[in-house]
Amino acid sequence: MPREFTPKVITANALLEGDVVYLDANGNWVRDLKQAELLTDEADAQIRLIDAEKRADEVVGVYLADMQPANDGPEPTHFREDFRRTGPSNYFLGKQAG
Image (cartoon, rainbow, N blue to C red; front, side):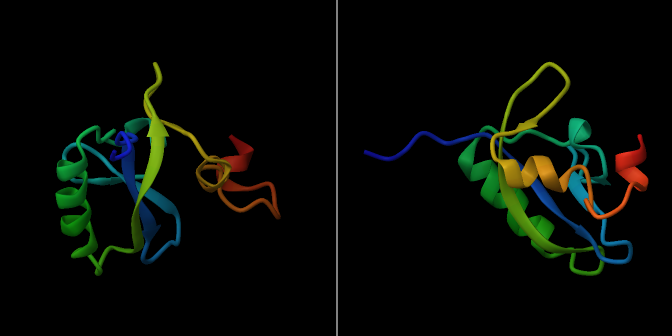
């Protein structure tokens, strides 16, 4: 029996800045996970992933990340994604300062 599909977001790293980015419902790369589109259909997620992978002039390392719905937008189900959204941990700058 196939497993139930876990909701996902499309994430990558911005090519020039290296920041973690997420794809929103309008096809824009955003830096705030709360603005990311939560994909709940497996076929739609795969199609959106293929389209995002073609944008190599904007991002690198595109993949689907497991999430769960929350009041403020998608929330990570895995420590890695929670850690990625806050940025590097070796200094108190950028996302850590906010």
